[in-house]
Length: 123
Image (cartoon, rainbow, N blue to C red):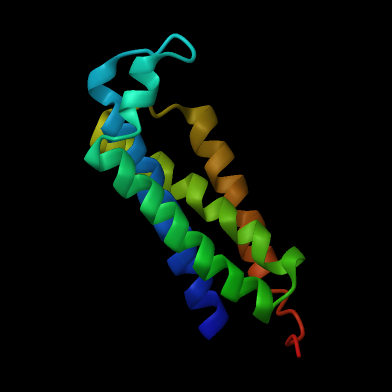
């Protein structure tokens, strides 16, 4: 159960990182490839926080990998897709379509099936 909590913590930080990066670039408009503008975005506070969130998420993920099978843990990352979908709809007004909802339901079903498989403890 503790490993599941660390997985959820790591995935949540990854989601937070994605949302912070999006918010950090929103005022820029579309970036057309590599430019000094693109480099300057790296120094925006929200973008920095997004990268820090990813870094902490990665540390948590290392703990997860040391405790369980990758084939059990990695599908749980798909929960991030579901969380990003809802938060981007709520925070950024992204479109919600029937096809996307069906996709999310399928992702959730897959994650539940993997979670129910209970892998053996890693020594």
